[in-house]
Structures are given as C-alpha cells and as structure tokens.
Image (cartoon, rainbow, N blue to C red; front, side, top):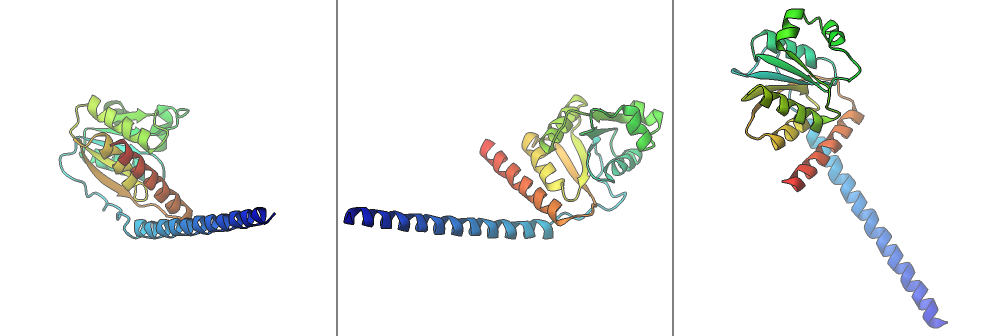
Length: 199
C-alpha cells in the first residue's frame, strides 16, 4: 500500500517535470522562430529598380504568383536582357493564347521568345523547371524574377540544384501581409533544413 502511494506520487512528479520541460521547449522554439521571422522581414531584399538589369543575361525566368512578375519579365526581355523568357508555374488549364492576351504579348514575341512552363506545383518545381529550360537552351546566365517576399527561397532552391549556373535575382515589390510573411518564413526554414540534410 505504501509502495503504491509512493509510486503514484513519483509518476505524478515525472509527468509534471515532463510537462514543464515540454512547455519550456515549445516556448523557446516559438521565441526563436519569432526572432528569426522578425530578422527575415527586416532584411528582406529591396525590390529591384525598374529597368535596372544586370548585363549579359542569356534568359529570363519568371516564377508566377503575385502581380507584376510577368510584366517585369516582359520589360526585361523587350529591353534585350535575355533572348528567351520562361513563365514557370502556369496553371495547366490555361492556354497559351489566354496568357498572351492577359499580358498583351504580340504574336511575333510569343513565337520567338516565350516559353510556357506548366509542370511546377511549388517553388522547388519552379527551380527544376527553370534549370531544365536553361540547360535545354544552353544558357549560362538567367535573370530570376519573382516577388520580394519569395525571392530568397526561390534562389535557395535554384542554387542548390544548379550552383554552376549564374543566376541574378530580380525581386518585384508585393504588398506584404503578416500571415503571408510568416508562412513564407516557415517555408524558407523547411527548404533550408531539407537542402542541408540532402547535401
């Protein structure tokens, strides 16, 4: 009887210690995540200046998503910064003509210089699609266009897959929301850990 009482008391103490330890660990992780998120937001890349492109780019890869990306890619292409442009991550249900009409892309430009990528479902898929495209066209350098919120994760995935390819980030300004930046930071951490474990 006495042993049973002591055993139950011991088990209760163990459970309390475990709960306290788990709670403190979770709080520490939340604090670390919050500090990292704050740093991620404060050090976000500034949007690229309009019409300020690096020299000697072979191609332009646009990773679709928020507004302004395709338009920025078309401006770069029409200014002569790259011989072709890939639009990666297009919804498979959208026809080429729908895309051309949406962005007022003329037939001449469409037939010579625009490639559609419909296989990518996420950022890693964008990276695979862009690198495959660059290799198919024997490109050594590519201008990467996506949002300022997304650019770091995109470049992380791209450089992990093709460190030999010269890639220049061109972030497009977007209207950030707290939830979007928190989600993007979490995705960035997941990509960082996965790439580190795979390397």
